[in-house]
Length: 391
Image (cartoon, rainbow, N blue to C red; front, side):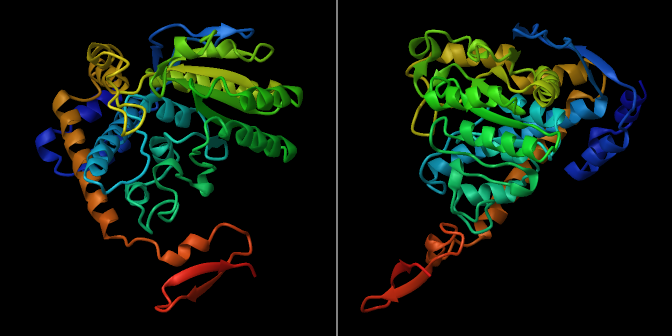
């Protein structure tokens, strides 16, 4: 096809920079569609599932590959920064689950809202966030997306309707349903995707929010990212019914291969259309995290290393797209390797730039608490003690 011919005209040896490589590929954005079948069928609950045939383009597949590779590299780098004590506190990594963030973004617009839990770095990138502000936030620097005050668990991008990561298990779901209420009230014809894990799926507040959303037919999509372990507890040890897509009872549900970016895209497009017209729907994304629950969890005490490596070999979302690209002759193995090398450099450069940003001033402890703000008063013999005063 035309895109394949154009792409193959770019020898890897003459692609010295990622911008040149990606730029050339974006120019060759063919309008000729590709139709690819999802890896496994969708499983549905009281709703007819969408078609397994997903329409994509050569450019979109290459974008999927690049975006997921950037996310993977960012999370691997975050692991190293945490171990070097440049990232402190809690840190939950997303490697393995990239297809959920990327596929979801491909199906919706920035007018739609997303809210998630604390495993939020890659969702921030998918919403248009940049690497420098991501690493700066992880390291608590002023240039961070939350001004260095949120850290790993509290990324935020209001201009893209990304309402952040949340540290209270399951608490983001009622907030997401509130966002959906606002969308319906304003007649915006948009939807909210509220993400949570299988560990949060048993929270009572989730069912309360789902009930009122169904009663008022709110455009809310509840997305259970089922990576099969709530911290160190296997789903079958915590849930009598781990078929999370059926948990809505009177609310339709869909089980999706969350390691297949095209399946995620198809499901999210279907879910958005359904939610705007009919009210809430539950999506269960069958996915997997390679790291432990957080950086304090080695991730190998409650599951075997063979299990982890087996998922990597058989279901890895990036390798799946790589095979599609190579199988449709959209790029050569060398071109994809060059892209990955440039991504590593891009991530390293972003870390270096993020490190140049200073830490927030201590007065920032008192901002963003009340709408009108705090007054700040210095006291003590050396005037270095601070306390807040209400205006």
